[in-house]
Every structure is written in structure tokens, then in C-alpha cells.
Length: 356
Image (cartoon, rainbow, N blue to C red):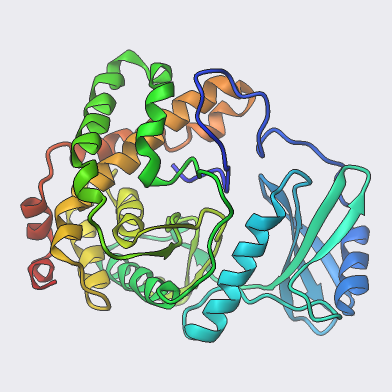
């Protein structure tokens, strides 16, 4: 159900010939990665490869034991997209230093990144501080954890509220604001799910005029999911890190909450966890009446997007279908759980919701 990273593209009815997920490049050796860090950042140490889809990522351990994340970008990555991410991280370091996000390490000449010339083309190198913690999806979930995660999202949003940076031109496939673009590929959805998904798109279209009246718009994380949230291993209800800023967009604030809520809905205890998450969010930031009214349809829209994109891309890239569809059943279950959820019903899940 997670996004595949920043994919600026127009949805078309034709098959995609290439994108970030299908690009290839020559793998960087561990020695070459460590040498690059020394040459660019002036520090020595050892590199260990980490799993990554859209770039090469390494855990770099400095000789004194300090740990960092080294990222060598995909050669087809848009430099403007990475520059935007860097600007946001630098903004958070200044405006919200207590929000636990990675910090950019400057190069020896004081820049946020360095461009390498390789046989595959230009590749952008960045070094970030390493946040140690347990990914949320690997922990035992519960209401207290959901409440703290909701609060963490609100605090991150407050830190991003004054950010003046903007993403590069184009559309992000995972931006709820562009849900209706996916109607062009809805035929890829299996017949037994298509009617429900089409109903969500129709609901989104009916609400579009109201959505245009949303006044609070800002940079949002847009991928606040259990693979991007780090918890303290000793106290697994405490958030100690937020990672992966590759799906950020400038959009209505409430969209960020809808994305996050969509990851709470595919379990049997979804109602209790959703209520706790909302209470946590509202403990740090209020919602406006119009945002509360639109939250159910926006959340359904995010789930419908996941269904459409998953089934579409699994056909385009059958060799990667297992990965693309890994959370599909949970997404569908979540959509069924809230298929008729109203704003009033959502408020009833969280007693403090009505105080927003």
C-alpha cells in the first residue's frame, strides 16, 4: 500500500514503457561507496548495503562508530525533486528541531549533495544522519501506539506549516488531489472490485467543489505509514523517527491525515486504533469543520488509489507483482470497513474529535 516513491507522471491509458522502478544502473561496490563518502564528506568508514527500490542506500559507519545513511540516487531521478527534499529537511532542522527526522550532512564544500558522473549518467549523492529504531510495522500495535503516532504526524505537520519550498512541476501518482486521473486506468481493476472503486471515484468527484474550498494547504509528508515510522525498541509506543520524504506534495493539510488513517483500517481493531490515532493528532493540532467533513471520502479515495495503482502496475510490471500487491488484501479490507463511514461516525470513534 505504500507509494513507490516520487513518480511525476501523467496517467495514460497506454502501457508505461519505463519509470523509476524499471530503471537500471551499475551497482556501486561497498568499497566505492566508502571511498565516495571520504572524497565528498572527508570522513572514513565502512559501508553496508541496505535494501532499496529506487536508489542505492547504504548504512555508513564512521571509524568512530557514528552511523549515517548514504544514498546514491537513481540516474533518472529528477534533481529538482531531491533538491526539494533537501530544502524541506533543512527547514525542519531549523523550524522544528524536536521532530525526529534525518539531518543532512553537508559536503566538505558546504553543499547538501554532490553529483557523481558515472557510466549510467549523473547520480546525486547525499549523506544523512541515521535514526536508530524499530519500524512500526514490526511492532505490536495498540491504541497507545496509534495515539502517539497520530500526535507525531500533527507535530510534523506543524513543523512543515511555514515551509516555503515547493515540489517540482508535475503530478505525483500518489497525490490524493489527483485521484480522478486514475479513472483512465480503472479497467485494470478486477471486476469484483471495480464497482466499489468506481463508487469512490464518483464520490470524490461529487465532493471536488467542496475540496476546492479547503483553506489550509502546505507541504505534507504524504506517506506516513508503518514502514516510515521508527519506534523506540525499549518503549515501542514512543516515536523516535520519521523517514522517507520522497512522496511530499503541496496539498490540503487534511490529505496527510487521510493517508495516515488509511494504514489503520485493515485490521479487526481498526475502529479503536483509528479513534486513538485521531485523538493523538487532535491533541497537537485541531481540524477545521470542512476538513472533518471531507476526511472520510479522502481516506476512501486513498484506499481506492492503492487498489487501482496496485492492480495497474502489477500488470505493467509482472516480475514485481508480488511486491506491488503485498498489501492488497489489507487495503481492500480497509476500504470495506469504511465503505459507509460518515463524518459523524468518524467523530464517534474518537471522543475528542468533536472538540476540534
